[in-house]
Figure 1: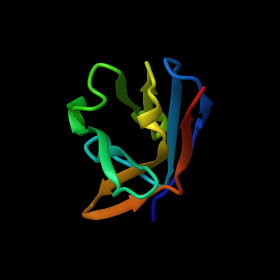
Figure 2 (figure 1 turned 30 degrees about the vertical axis):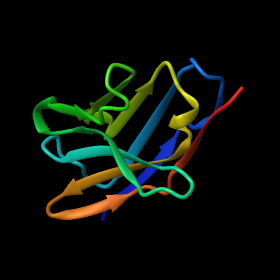
Figure 3 (figure 1 turned 45 degrees about the horizontal axis):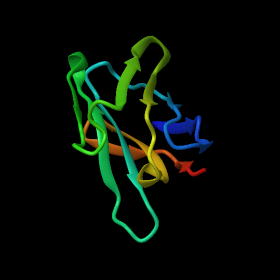
Length: 115
């Protein structure tokens, strides 16, 4: 059984930066797909960034060039570095893992971008 715990959310001004972390208890293998999703009020949950086995990454068009996903397999942790934040980035951010055919979600962390 895998559990995901996110941290690093908060309130930041437009143009600022935040780094989200997601640590897995239980085993996450380096080949497992890890991702960040977000859900803004009144909107559907959307994929933000994904990192596959071997380090291949992909991003939503809305965050390309501003967000970076990375992983530390030794620490069972995935990160989301968010730069040049915009008010439209405001959402609850969720960590997601796909391991041995099962999907796992974290509890979410709130990111608010506001002046």
